[in-house]
Image 1 (cartoon, helix red, strand yellow):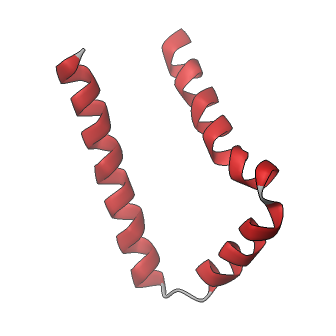
Image 2: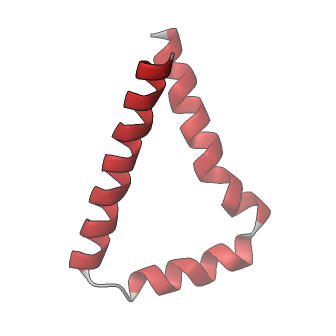
Length: 63
């Protein structure tokens, strides 16, 4: 559970950093995201999920 909480905390840090460091640029990116079709967003989400699983797998295999 301690490791899980550490991972969640790191994800929150990484997700929040761009908003704190580049708020203006993030607003423009969000506007562009709103223009994308649901199919494009879904595809990007699936790709990111698969990439995340590959990173976890690589970390387990190499560690």
